[in-house]
Length: 82
Image (cartoon, rainbow, N blue to C red):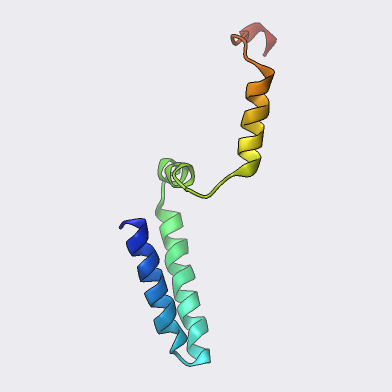
């Protein structure tokens, strides 16, 4: 499902949930968390990494680390130094 459609769907779910009585809202949240937990359990290692890698959110600490590493320069891997 495209990200835009997913965002629209999430907004629609939030709007509909907001019309429910307060005591039902916790049931909706419990169900969403249950589905998320089941999905996470069913992901294998590769799928989990793909999800993390493809996450578009910025990672400023990783970016800073990469810039610092690139500033140090590079040299061929010397297995005798490991």
